[in-house]
Structure formats: C-alpha cells, structure tokens
Image 1 (spheres, rainbow, N blue to C red):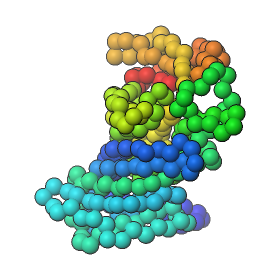
Image 2 (image 1 turned 60 degrees about the vertical axis):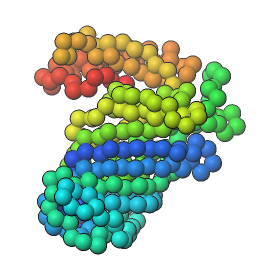
Image 3 (image 1 turned 60 degrees about the horizontal axis):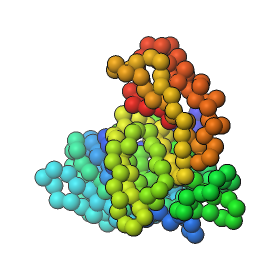
Length: 277
C-alpha cells in the first residue's frame, strides 16, 4: 500500500487559470537577489479563509486577494511549512466561491547556483563579453531556469503540481544589451531605467508549471525552419549559445527541425508554438 503522504496535494477547491509574472530589480552579482510580483487568476470553488501555494526559499512581502464586487483583502498572516514547501495565506474574512478571483503576491527570491528553480551558470567567454555581463574572475554568468519536476516554487509562488495547469504571461527586467528567452515569442521590449529594459512574452498555452522556462544572457543563435508547414507556414527553429559559440550549435540545429517535423507526424498533430528555441 502506498504511503498516504504520496497524495498530500494542494486543495482541489482552488484552481489557477492564469499567472502574470513580473521579475524586476535583479541583483546580478553579490547576493543575486530579485523582486517579483505574481498575479494569479483563480477559480475558487468552495468558501475558505486560507489559500495555500507552493513556495521554497522565497519571502512573501505583500499578499492581496480581490474578486468582482468584493472588497480587496490583504492577508493577515503568512505562514511557511519548509518540509512541504508551502506558504499559507490567511485572510481576515471568508472568501466566497468565485470564477475569477485575483491573488497578488509580492515576493523576493535568490538566483541560486544549484541548477534548480531560477539559477545562474558560470562559463568561460570566447569573445569579449558585453559590459553588463556579470563576472567572477575569468568566469562570466548567464541565467536560466529548471522547473521539472517541482522547482517552479523556487522561482515564484505557485500551485506547483502538474495537474494544476494554467496559462502564463511573463515579463522580466534585464540589462538592455542582453537577450531574454522564454517559452513564447517576445511580445514587447521597453527601456525602463538607465541601461535596463523589460522584455514581455506572449501568453503561453495551458500547461503545467514545470514546463515554464526563461533564460537571459550574452546569447546568439543559429536558425533554420521546419520543412512542414504549420498553419500555412514553416516554424523557425533556433539553437542558442553564449556569444562566440554559435557554430558549435549547427549540428544540433540540423537535427532539431527534423525532430519537430517527425513528432508532429507521429503524433498526428500540429505544434501550438510559434517557434522552437
């Protein structure tokens, strides 16, 4: 008989619909801290006074809940369970069922060096790096995520279980000479403070948290296109490397577009993505 703890899951009465994730004030050096705001659109199916999310090595700063025709509530208490990697937001009044409640969470986190969640990677540059690239001695840094199987909770508070699928909107503030990537094509890039820009991405399809990804750094790419057409046109397929190494990506690129076409044929489906990086 399986241990009952194997089914210790989040409440079935609260379902995420969409995440709007904003990451800003990234400290690319020193403590490697960052600030974030995640706005989660929720369906609340039963009356409750607590909302439980997954969070690991994050600090919540401010939590609010709003719903149509209901006064916005600020969480009166935030508690953490390190063992289960959860945070509980308790509100002063009962929360009634709603099909489009909004949970706003301001938080801080750390870009770690453990290859889990939102993390940093060292590499040796082969060309003169851009001025904004963080460095430590002869090594330089790029930044990326690894959320599978349950490490999205290290990057932002979320309902980090594969059955709790939702769509995702992401924007991230980075130095304006670096390249940012995510699951979806770039929607907009706007300069903010001196030397910084906010890169926004198109909304993702409905998917699990562990499939969300982002990366940024001093990057370049090689590109080819699928031979099959999807919605009337081929899809661009790109392989990214740190700048100066893109020629090493050509073998991978030669195979990548073929893999996309092959599995589209085998699965008898058309890819829902606009490009593959």
